[in-house]
Length: 214
Length: 243
Image 1: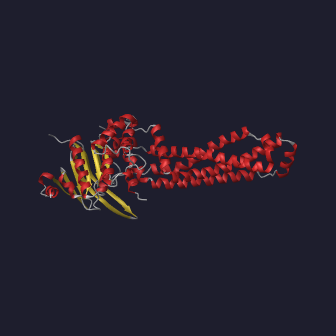
Image 2: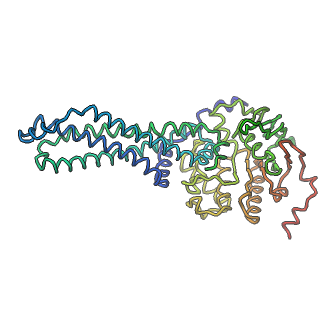
Image 3: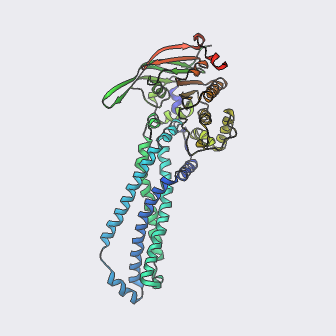
């Protein structure tokens, strides 16, 4: 008898397509909470991108820009690179902690739902998978918005400072490179933030998860 | 006809820790449940009904003793096998319905089938049939909060039957329903029990349940007080319905 159970090991499945649909729907329906997660990543990434855009613009202008611009820039150029790195890391850490916090809340709220899914035969890693996919989607959306906001605001502020001259030395390629980096960074930070809460929830016994009232 | 045993518990004990004080909820339960049987576990609240229900369903582990489902000791199963058991062998019905709030009635029912490896189209078709069986053929695409309590419980029953389980476990299925709806749900369960020859185990203190049960297990203070066959039961619940 025990052998028949052994044979079925891999017979419980959650196809990626279905998991994706479920996560997407969950984000849409719990829009309030998912926007909080998304917002924290938006701010973190926007700050990162704004600093980066500024940096690559200045270094590019110093290399290839017209003399008049170089003179202005050299006056204002500081040596606060280490301070910038410090600020960026700090802002990203704060935003990751925000994500962990908000995900912990969301896991508690959905404890009964998680318990029910486990009663229906969901494996622990399905639960983790669903939360991670959700975080992945939120991370991508949040990072994209963050990148757009960061680049746009910095460009506007540069435009006010140096007028139309900036377009001649605008480092499009460099910014694209950093945008890609920000996208990967933002998405992975969101997923890292979601990992601990989802592992925590997946480990609960179904009876305990269902009993837990919020 | 020899009776096949589907669930057997041997000296099941469960102790919870309330702070530092141990609380014995179950103090050694021995019951045997046969295939196709409708069993009610009755007892006052706090008697350990739900705890026993969780043990039988593999939702919680006993502190001592063994639970056999289909002659397999469920303590020996690993995570995959336990999930398979919950998915294919057992259907759960809860007092609070526990439908997934973000999914429609139809999707709620397809979920266990998808876990069980069925493709989406087949699962959808089967879910539609099941919803028609429970009388909700016209409410396929409603979300749980758009349904009444009785309707939600019908969806939950359809979901419990999704993978043609051998056992249906119902914990206070009528607890949140009014008298009339409760009776409807009980009758629905009884019909399904006859049609599909599944064992139905309910933990309840709803006396309406007595009328349809084959056997009644009375539990008091974590012990089996007595087990009664309905044939020998001298009750007038039948009259109650005719009044």
